[in-house]
Length: 226
Image 1 (cartoon, rainbow, N blue to C red):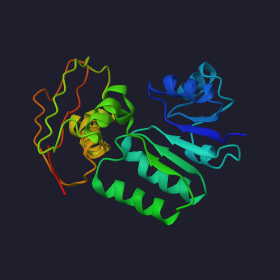
Image 2 (image 1 turned 90 degrees about the vertical axis):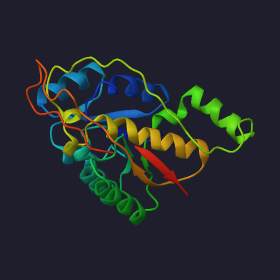
Image 3 (image 1 turned 30 degrees about the vertical axis):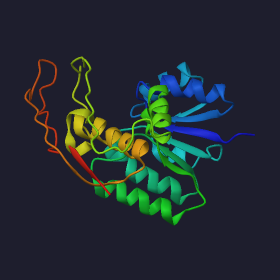
Image 4 (image 1 turned 180 degrees about the vertical axis):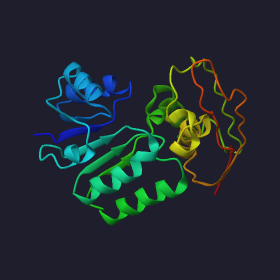
C-alpha cells in the first residue's frame, strides 16, 4: 500500500499533479484550501474525500503519510516544521520561503528528523531538455564550464487580483519565483554549489488597472560557485 497524501494549497498546478499521483497508485486523501468554498470545490473536482480550512486537520489526519505543500511561500516554513514534528514526510514547492532564514529553519527541521523524507521540489531539472544537457555535460561534450548565461523569455498575463506573487515579504517577485529555480539548475548541471548570489531587479509598474496594491520586488542575480 502506497502512502496517503495530503495536499496543502490550491494553486492551478494541483489539477496537474494530483491526477499524476493517482495514476502512480498514490491515494490523495486530504486537501487544504484557504476558504471553505475553495477547498470544497477543488476536492470535489479532484475526487479527494476530505478537505479542510485548518492546516492541522490535514496534518493530524491519520490517513496522511506525506504532506505536499504548495501554498504561499510565507506559510510553507511553519507548515513544514510542524509536519516533520508530527512524523509526516514533506514535499515542498518552490520558492520554499520569502527569505534565507525561512529556508534555514526548514533545513534544520529536516536535519533533526533524518528518517523522514523532506524535499523541496525543483521541477525544472526533470525537463527532458535539461536531462539531455546534463548528459552532454557529464560526458564532457562541452568541456570546462566557466560562465552560465541564462535568458528567460515569456509572456505573463496581468493578474486579476493582488496576491503573494506581488509581495516580496510573502515570497513573491520574479527574483524569488524564478531565480531560485535558476540557481538550482546551475547547481544540478555543474555539480557546484552557489556560495553567494547577487542581482538586481526593478519593478517599473507599481500598480495596474486590476491591482491597486504596491507591487515591489527585491533587489538581487549573479551566482558565485565554489
